[in-house]
Length: 431
Image 1 (cartoon, helix red, strand yellow):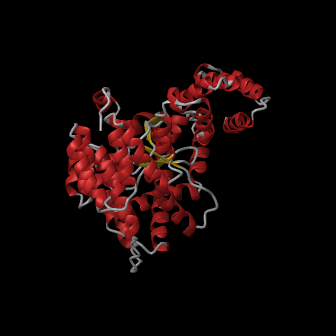
Image 2: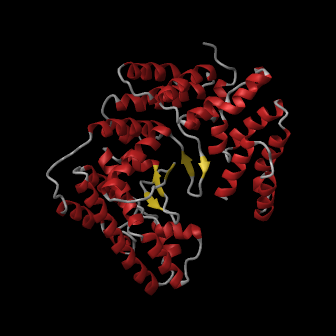
Image 3: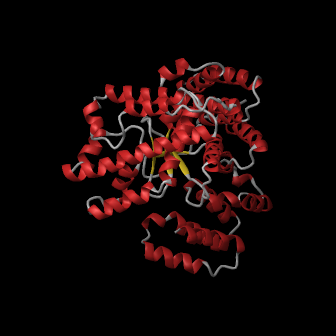
């Protein structure tokens, strides 16, 4: 296979695109990975079902070295990539997610918001998200500098918060009992976080003014709550989680965790690490061996990501398509293929087919600049003037005031094009 001339440059500058598409979400870069998405959705569905919750729980994965998870003001669970890396099995991750769901189900966010509004001290969305977040670990300087501005007020607030954290811990433990599963991995995770914080100078005195209970108290609570003698450990879940975890370890620089992985997960993580370091041949050799002995279709997507980052676009598309045969809703693989369609080589009829066949990407990712630019290119070739006007509008949204935006969106509702009208209505309803 021939390597494109720009392959080396792609390897240097675009490697972070392997298995993620990074976007700014207010908390750092967001990781978009379909394998992780469907796995966490399944875990959350288990939590929701046993707790008889009648609503969908949303989540986002943030690219962060902090072992952390929290709920924001919109009841969206944020999961840091480092948390996934440091969970030794799926039960540890499940317990953290159950803790966060507990905050939502027990209405903690609303109660905290009322407390903050009553005190009239903290009225910004960003700070509120920090306060409301049920982080397993916390930035002590941020908490002390921004939250503890009044000793009396902070004491009143933190006592309230510690109670909520303990409630969320109990909620997680009850959830594990309802699922008839447990694992020492939860204690191991807490001990890992505590040790890291102690190494950073987060002493027990600083824990006293933290929004979270002492780590030893949380571990004691876990030990005292181990009523479940029946260990319904889901081996299939854990197999899937181990591959996901290995992928995140491979993209990180965490040598310590990588060395602790079992095979074939260690080899998987190392194949990604080899590709990141520039050793494509060895990376693919290792990855091909794992693929040969495993039916995990997402290994093919990882191979596609690696090939794409080195400039082998044609070969990468082949493996993305193989992944899509099993997971047709993997929009991130669809985007990668769509972005690399050579429109100039298409006839007008084929261009129209591409326009229609990928319209679902436009509906779902209308705020993705790459998708918009590709659709602009398609509309230009097909001379779709109304669409060109709309794409120009969307691509300049950052420079448009809200009032002007609303007026422009309303004007586009007069279109006779049903596809364009559907997109306009989607955007209007969201905004």
